[in-house]
Length: 353
Ligand SMILES: Cc1ncc(COP(=O)(O)O)c(C=O)c1O
Image 1 (cartoon, rainbow, N blue to C red):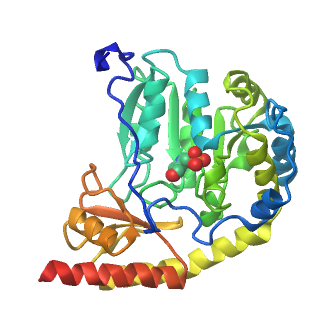
Image 2: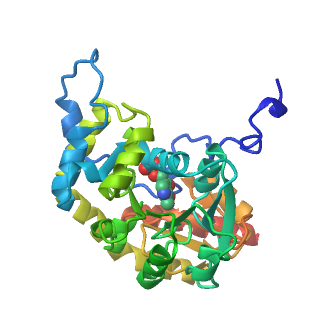
């Protein structure tokens, strides 16, 4: 067997980011640095589970909790194994082989993977110089329309939100599905989940992996209108969200005090970290998320490797188009940011020698 035996549309795929990790401080995944979600952890400690029965087919327990939280109906939700599963479900539900899907550049790197899995084709739309949407580029020419347009807002890796008026213009002018990936929206205090009945082509994706501090359990969901949710649920893998994760997510959703606390420290620490980075010669970009993208003052590879030696992992975007020599780091608590910036200072000093 060799790669030519693979389906032609997946032949170009390679394994995803999978760093060798020991005891390093992980500032490379944009997760909540406060650690495990406390309500979910308490739920798991007290859990007595019948391992011999399936979870609910479509995670009705979680969907009911979400319906209460958003003031919508259970049938507005599709729940699954991370918002990554929701991405996969959207592309496999709505694209035929060869259809184009438009993805802004730079944005979340796994979009191209899910586009390839569905057999559809990536169309890239460059963001403007200030990393905002180019509405015309997103929409494409009238004779070259995409089936699905996808946008993360706040965007990863740049960190900024896209302008609301641009998102709404795209939603009204595009006739196909528009996926708004809100993995980090709690930090921006903005969501379009309340607009799913206003735009019949809008799917909003949310995750428990970031501010809810539940990345290990892989829970994500889509919020959309009743018709689209039904179509997505018909395609999504039944039982894909296991019982343990579903129960933990319900517990986590019920602890909004933890969410507030998690947002508050990021809003407090983020400008301080950005200012420190500037002082060290970095060029940080404006961000509405719990991470900062910054152009490094030394070679990005040297910085990443040096920080790893000092026990800190951050993410390298230095070789990618539009983010030349840039790195992305999670915003920590004051203590964690000190560990990270002390390590950066040490690496910069080593680079000068
Ligand atoms: C923009 C964006 N969307 C989706 C995801 C995936 O989230 P999940 O863990 O729910 O699959 C991530 C994770 O880093 C992300 O950055």
